[in-house]
Amino acid sequence: MMEGHCTCGAVRYRMTERPLFTHACHCTWCQRETGTAFALNAMIETDRVQLLLGNVEEIDTPSASGRGQVIARCPACKVALWSHYAGAGRKLAFVRVGTLERPGDCPPDIHIFTSTKMPWVTLDGRVPVVPEYYRAKEMWPDWALARRAAVLAGG
Amino acid sequence: MEGHCTCGAVRFRLEREPMFTLACHCTWCQRETGAAFSLLTLIERSAITPLSGRVEEVTVPSPSGQGQVVRRCALCKVALWSRYGAAGPGMAFVRVGVLDRPGAFAPQVHCYTSTKQSWLVLDGSVPVEPEWIDDAKYWSADSLARQNRLQDLGAAG
Image 1 (tube, one colour):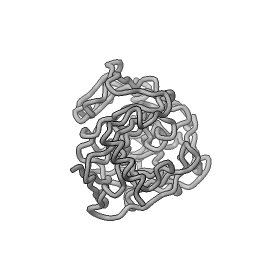
Image 2 (cartoon, chains in turn blue, yellow; image 1 turned 180 degrees about the vertical axis):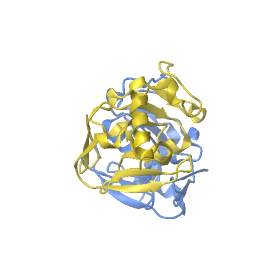
Image 3 (cartoon, helix red, strand yellow; image 1 turned 180 degrees about the horizontal axis):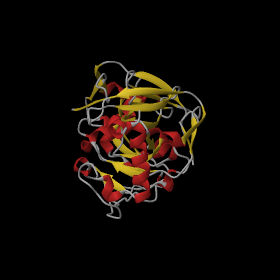
Image 4 (cartoon, chains in turn yellow, blue; image 1 turned 30 degrees about the horizontal axis):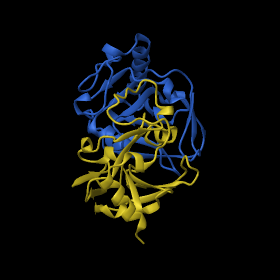
């Protein structure tokens, strides 16, 4: 099980299962939100993200789709821990990999929106690289697709 | 060069070329960005002109023990720039990703690569340091002079 926390330590959480799929997203929105070259987001069912300490504050934030996202931040240090995007809604959480205690456990499964990748960032081709978005059915392993279908079908 | 937060409330402008740009792979920067490394360009605070919006300052711990003050949009909370206790109050560490043309700021060095994500490839085109960098080794003479002036101002109170 993977645990993570914010910078000040007021919020701690645990992923109770391995995440479904991890994106390195090079879109300009992710660059702005993270302040860096790309975001690193591990997707997981929200009910498998368990708060161990503290509570998050949810900030409604615009997103590239125009439909917005909710970013869960530590109320004290404001560091972002995960997001919910309009597409899958609150059933899926996009956990910021850098907040995990062992972020190396979640390497990217794909690089997306590389049409706006910073020119100096080198990708070695070990995982798929797509200029924009992609279809999960074509990229995700069967077990992850099954879990996603189950959570999206739930109430 | 201008920059802004995600909701657009806060906009600012850099009035001159920054002194230095680095990618920091320390675990603190990974946590703060939520990503694999931070990308920071260093400029005098006095060279950042606020254009709109309200920022809030959030003081957080930092690995030096001297703390960091992060300036965030008061509405969307996205981080814009920081000052670190260890670098003095006059130096701003601007998050490159919030600038309008972030691709214009490539890192001049990668630091703290002892904790770099193992999947991440660095192509060797810029120096790589396992821990912190010796500024005198990597900064231009002009940038070192600007840094010295800031430290003199800081010492003068």
